[in-house]
Amino acid sequence: MQTTPSDTTGTVLVIGACGQLGFELTHELRQLYGPANVIAADVRPPKQAELQQEGPFELLDVLDRDRLYALVQQYRPKQIYHLAALLSATAEKDPKFGWKLNMDGLLNVLDAAVEYKVAQVYWPSSIAVFGPDTPRDHTPQLTIMNPNTVYGISKLAGEQWCEWYHKKYGLDVRSLRYPGLIGYKSLPGGGTTDYAVDIYHKAIAGQSYECFLKEDTYLPMMYMPDALKATIDLMHAPADQIKVRSSYNLGAMSFSPAEITASIQRHFPDFEVTYRPDSRQQIADSWPKSIDDSQAERDWGWQPQYNLDKMTDDMLLHLQPEPA
Ligand code: AKB
Image (cartoon, rainbow, N blue to C red; front, side, top):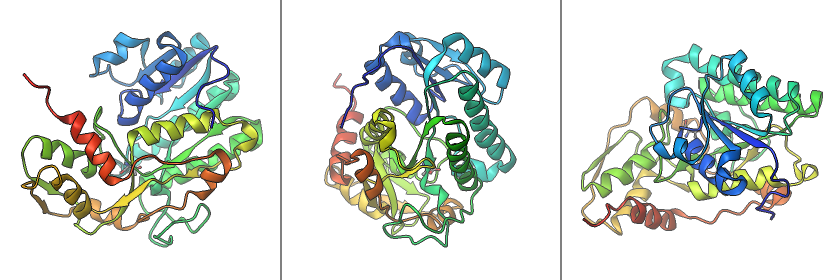
């Protein structure tokens, strides 16, 4: 699989660069294309100083169409990564805004990309596009969807819009249905899978953890280096290999809170977890337990590198405080 771009000219715009994925993806893209060529953008100034120190940063509310168009006109990006969204748990609390941000934000980006002939757009979808009627084990690429969260409905509608812009305007828009993403560099916010990041922070701090999902709730998950590789490999794959223009199923591992606890206890035998399920349990119960990503493997060679224990070893190693 090709992992370095053949065309290194032109800039890249990352919208939602301060988020869990955006922060790490911006850094990765800056390594590939050169820091000055990757414009990080977000609705708020970054808490992570690197984002501004490493390369350009622009304030952008993706719902502000005029500002988005002005930035695209100024930088003429060859690629836009549009990552700004409200995640599952937050969108349930503010459904109208969740719909507005997730939908209007995407349509603004797709329109700007058509208008300014942006070569490629990346937009993340999620396992949230599936719902309680979906087969939960080894969920196929094409199956019953019927999502029952605002986030899931917006992601499914977004997938259909991406497909439509590709068909109607020939826009090269590509997408992945991420599982829960886990990384040590940045925290997620407002998702149902967030427990799988929080739990490592508690373990390393020597504290116990109260989990908001039941101990036997299986969900598909992925370590951040795999998510970054998948995203970049997808964007570098020749266009004729991209057979799915809605969004690709993407899998790596699947585990329950009890299993991640056991994995952490290999390092911290006294680490304790208690369970107090809240409204996120209902969301988790409507999502797949594991994902069939064979189409991504066939079309552009997707292969994950990390399983649960390998991820735990790496997470704990990196979260360890520096010796004084
Ligand atoms: C969430 O939990 O909402 C996200 C997702 C699976 O898309 N992490």
